[in-house]
Length: 227
Figure (cartoon, rainbow, N blue to C red):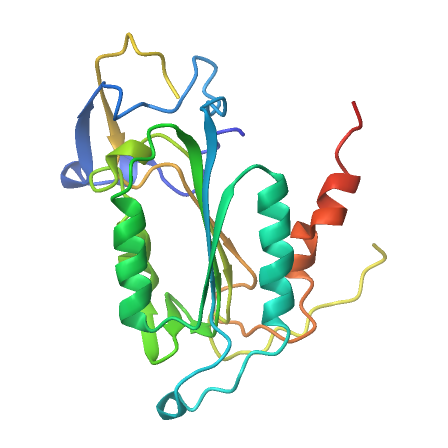
């Protein structure tokens, strides 16, 4: 997995957001000398799937049809990719934050990466618990390099199947880590995050979205070369 650094430019980050991280077994850079991520740790990592289907009446939100199928397919996919998958259903805002806080405090030193899948209603910058909105920045902040030290320098993937606004996107038809001898380094605390959204900013998600189909186990492994 290549470290493209698309979403974080070190020059644009304030000094207060850059921490000095001293090399140790618990704070591995996660990078190899060719700037690719080291994926040969004993474990691939955790995959947390939060599947919110039913919402409190006070939110005025309708149940999300089809989401259980998505959650099941994603579980199968990441299980076959050797992740430890944990499915969580219908979590409140408080439960989501508590879960993320708890997971970020685990020891990830033997894990290559971290994946979090969020299936819910949403809006720009937020995801909905069953009782209201959660700020995505707050949720992902638990995994910053200065908070979750054992994932520093390792890829952290957030897959978000949710709306990002109210404008409808109707779509269009188509035919188709560093070595241990580096004792000290400075990296942005929000480095190594990849956010994969199902829609563009300000757009809604329709029921016939094919976004998660690309992660269907059969399709993923049919495209892998046979050895």
